[in-house]
Image 1 (cartoon, helix red, strand yellow):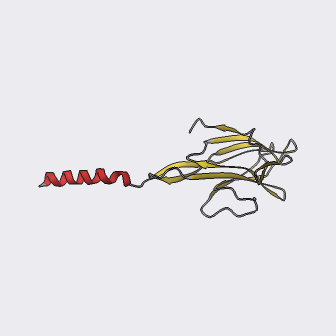
Image 2 (cartoon, one colour):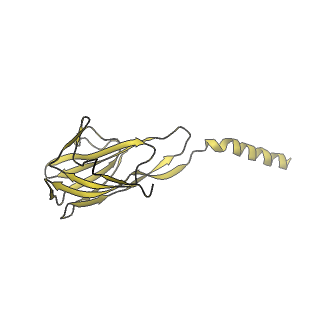
Image 3 (cartoon, helix red, strand yellow):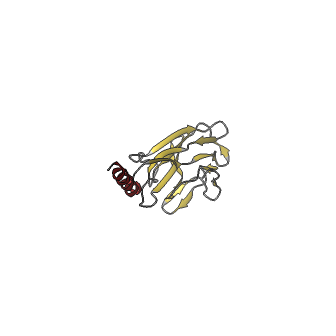
Length: 158
């Protein structure tokens, strides 16, 4: 009798193991480093905010509910590094979730979107590049100040 209960417990465990939900740590926004310029000259003491959420249509909106964020300031040479931001994914069998992140630049009385990225699955572990407040780039309806073509995505930890 005890042996049959053991087999029943094993069979029940095997049958339900595919339905078990458990948290897995992951990167939800990469480490972002770079230099902030204004017409080619470094911008010191500007605030750089990394937000893990889908990008708002303009930087003046508050961070979306449930978003994560980290803030840093540029040094005397305009250099900055912020992130990564981590979170927990609940593992299930329904496919990849949509992830997004963006950078907000606050310099003087300006608040601008540096760049944004979104997609399914995972994000790169690191992104580096340069941003110039005097060189706006239009991507769809959004104006950004970090040239996506110059941003170098480093995925060695991916």
